[in-house]
Length: 316
Image (cartoon, rainbow, N blue to C red; front, side):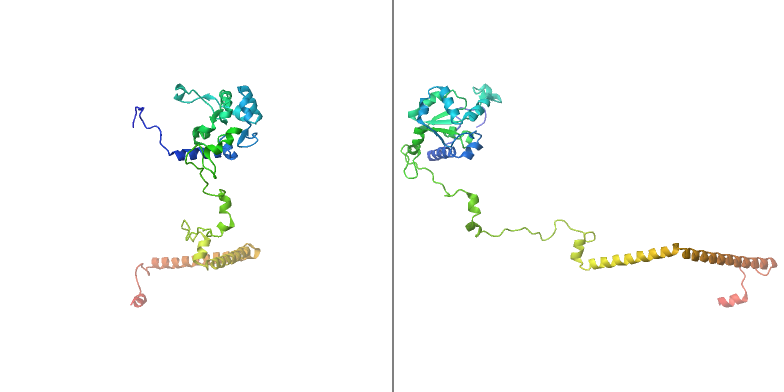
């Protein structure tokens, strides 16, 4: 149904009465578990025990000051101080709708008809709620859906829990046909069960993931491991190439050393001298030949392009 909101909208969802009773019993059991109570944010470090059960004499505390003294004696001072300091103005437009302030939840005092005076004494303590043991409310036992409310029982109210919810041996006398839910597991320590020898003996071995190939293709020309996988002789070939390179470098160093020595320099000078002598003689022979040709041309015995009979015979 779309806006505007109608008063006949279905605001609540129905639940079976047995489910609601199980929820109350479960929330009540969670209030006796110290880790759950601390995880919900309650300061119970100085509380002697959980669930906290006080003598019925608390009903004689008809004033708020006396009840506050009693709660402080029981180690609830840190919890009450935390709740009192948490009061602040609600954020958003809800502050205009008769709920201007918000405050954390403090302890819940559960009483019976024999100790109903505690209700009047606790009504002015910030964050402290009271509830009759015969009218336990899931909204008070688990505010916001979070289990582990810090509960304080009076002795007579704690004794009447068996008649309200019953036991595993006898059903409830107030809730017709209701019996407490039995745990599905006799031992709720899952870590102990899983790590037990009986369970571990039946389990399969741990599967280790093995890849048939690498995620990325590797170049054997740059990756030595891949090259050895493809060519086992690659390592030996590389060693031979390195050996030859080393020998070649040694020979070259020896030759350079020989050339740079005195004997090498002297031999080089001798070679240069002989080369220059040969070059000079060659140039002189070319010059003599050119002079002969020039002399023949001047005498008219030689014309460029003419051939002799011997040359023609050779050509034939």
